[in-house]
Each structure stands twice: as C-alpha cells, then as structure tokens.
Length: 150
Picture 1 (cartoon, rainbow, N blue to C red):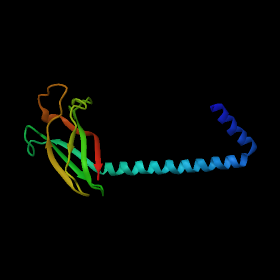
Picture 2 (cartoon, rainbow, N blue to C red):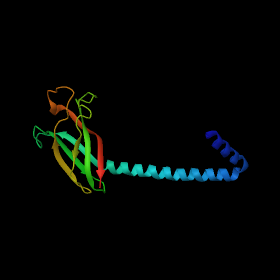
Picture 3 (cartoon, one colour):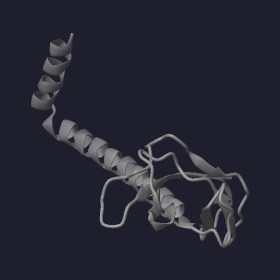
C-alpha cells in the first residue's frame, strides 16, 4: 500500500512539477508556522514558571526543630499561582552528591498567590541517605519545581 502511494506522489511530481512544488511549499510554510507558534507557547510558559521562585534555607531562628527548613515562594509573574510543588536537594559542603533520597518526599504549598505575592513556611528535612551529625551545615536547594496557575 505504501509503495502505491509513493508511486502516485512521484508520478504527480513528474506530471505536474510546478503545482506539486507549490503545494509542497505551502505545506512547509504551514508546518513552519504551526511549529513556530508551539515553540513560542512553550517558551512563554517556561518564562512564567521561572518567574515563580522557591528558595530553602536551614533556619531554627524562624522554624522549629521538627520542620527546620524555611521555604520562601515568590510569585513574580503576572498570573495567579494555585499550587507549587518541589523536591529538596541536600549537599555537604565540598561534595557534589545529593544526600537526600530522590523522590522520597514531594513538598508543596497550596496557598493561592496573586501576582507579586510571596509565601514563607517551614517544612521537615528530606529523608537522607545516611546519618549526618550537623544537619545545619548542609547546603539545601530546590529541584524539580512544578507550578500550577489558575
């Protein structure tokens, strides 16, 4: 069946070359326009997600020992944020390996944040791969941030 369609298309190119190349050009232009639009949409969505920042720091001055990590979520976008989810990475100073067990805990904040608003809260430590004597000396950071807008 494929060969029949290929033979028909090739024979049309031989019999009507101007019309076939013109039609091919129109298809290429239409495909380029659709591809450009989808690329722009993806780029714009990423910019809006990047405008929502999540930061983490160990802070017993702000938080208690059961939840010692201070989380700050800043919505610098022009949209309303309904939900933010993230994972936390823990590194010892001078080492590159992540001490947090990947995927063991997904953190989230369900406070609706309007444009230019922020939220501060405390969360517990992620599960660690091994015991750490001084957790306060670990470097914490955010990975796999996901934002849901209204």
